[in-house]
Image (cartoon, rainbow, N blue to C red; front, side, top):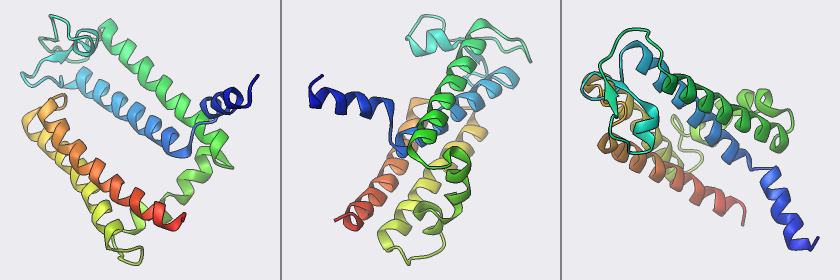
Length: 178
């Protein structure tokens, strides 16, 4: 096998810790949305999202909500969420010594969390951390008030804030690594 192919294959089998953390966050978010969908319905009309049609742009995106009634879409979406979390945990196990447990213990001292209350890492990190928090809080508060858990407009505002925040942290990380 040529050297380039083996490096590519190794990169796929050993994802970065950031990609693994992103997978864990995405999977967890999917599970929260699915539980909310089962309990209260997350579609803007108060209905229950039919995940298969929602994700494939199908014709029947929502249905009337009935508390606690499971549909196959809910089970499939939960299984997908658990699968993505498992992939993230496996990736962290391969990219961080001690795996998820060690990573989670180091979380409070990570630049994103420590920069919320201190400018010792630079003003870009502080601004970035607050943008990430602001984006997450906007999504949670707005969606709670207006039942817009799966609204693309709410996502776009949240993603813009969170992406800029992570981008500011990436800029600072690149300065440190030079």
